[in-house]
Image 1 (cartoon, helix red, strand yellow):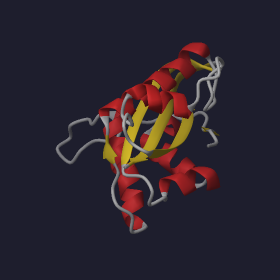
Image 2 (tube, one colour):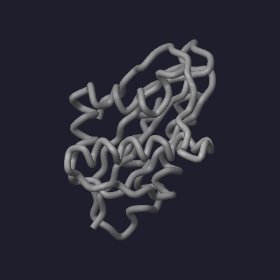
Image 3 (cartoon, helix red, strand yellow):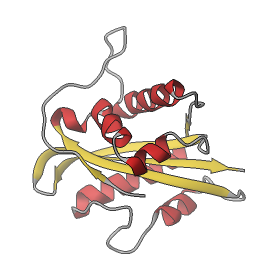
Image 4 (cartoon, one colour):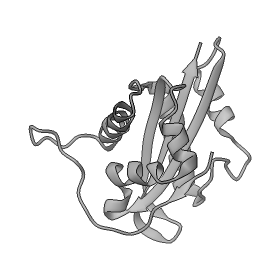
Length: 159
């Protein structure tokens, strides 16, 4: 599980055909599932508890100004998913993709492109293992950059 850094740019959020602005995580989910479909893979479905776990991680990275799958206190993906309650009583597997950027390079389309250009992230995105996902972003001053958005996507299969 390797993070990815995306820097500097300017742009706008994607919009629906009706002209209504979609939530960034909704745009991200649509883009991820579009890529998966192009490779003959099934869609991943959002899970609220996974989204909250991902959000806590994105928020933590922004508030404590670090970029890693492991928090400064040692918290890991395993810890976040377990604490979410989503996998209680199940066997499970998980993967995580993280990225950050400013302006247009912090938007869903560019983050997905960056993930697809990273072998580690591409392997997660294109794995048939995953069925559920939690997507989040937190924006603010990050690693000296104003207006940065930090993304976390937690991918899970439980059985």
